[in-house]
Length: 377
Ligand code: SAH
Ligand code: SF4
Image 1 (tube, rainbow, N blue to C red):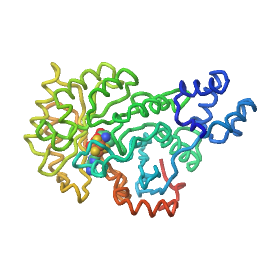
Image 2: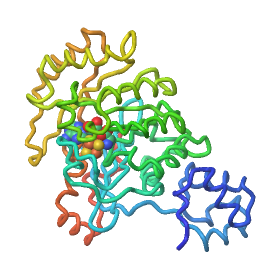
Image 3: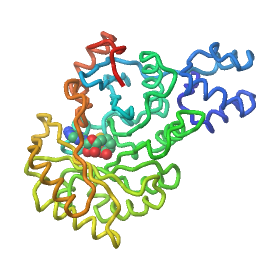
Image 4: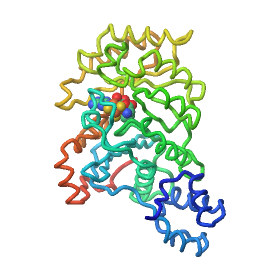
């Protein structure tokens, strides 16, 4: 079997080149061809020695996951469903905004954490994605979009690890992918523009701080252990106090001077004034001026098996105001791509019904709802 070069960060690629009997610096050229130019054919790589190209043709390939389908929303959001085999699929979502293009990437097929409000969690855990499968989502999307928008410059300016899966439970595959995103010879994204979202895998938050301190989002969802134990089962292992202490430690390394707390608004469950009050107290317990953080309130995207409902908009706004009045920076997330089920937690929508995925895999077709050329940035 030949090596998929999307599996490597620059250091890994240098080791690979050495194993082929080549100089390490060849890896830089190769890495740039792959990630900056989107090349997958070694014959395209004109400044590489012919002898190296011939070796690469024998020992290597560059390949992202196969696309099962593509959906383009009326608001320009694009969702791709990728086939990961065995009847499973993961999703990647591109969200264009005026001043940025954000790619939401998956890290696992399914998820073992099993949060009650998350359809990926309900699906259970299938498998970890490899580095090539994680990084390949960015490689594919960036170069696909450049071709279709007919631009040479970068289209994706921000990456969020907020697709399917718990990225910090797939750390060894995640790390080289993050490094390639940040590498000047790769995508050259600043650490502020790459966000890892976690349900709170405490030891791996410390590892991330040491190895590759990108922006951190923590999925909080509850102000007390009793409630969070129920919504995010990982809380039983890493309770709130420990989680928030870890956030404080992370701040010493973070590229931004705050941690983002995500909070999914669930009708009658975690959206009452007393929950906001408890949240304010929780943040104040950690640090003299409180833990430096921003709240991002996410309108819940309901799915029937959850038995949960979205909080009414007025309640979300009242909750936001209560936090703001206490001095906590709070935003309410806009939902994007609703018409194509691309919003948070709906990512597994198609996958849950495995027969449907099987049918799609059999069909192997791309569904174009609107020509991609029409997408405005
Ligand atoms: N596993 C990581 C990252 C993937 S989930 C994490 O939990 O942080 C990305 C975000 O989507 C998390 O904040 C998660 O809580 C949120 N989310 C999951 N299901 C949702 C739903 N049905 N509606 C709204 N947000 C949801
Ligand atoms: Fe996993 Fe995140 Fe979904 Fe929880 S919210 S089940 S951690 S993907």
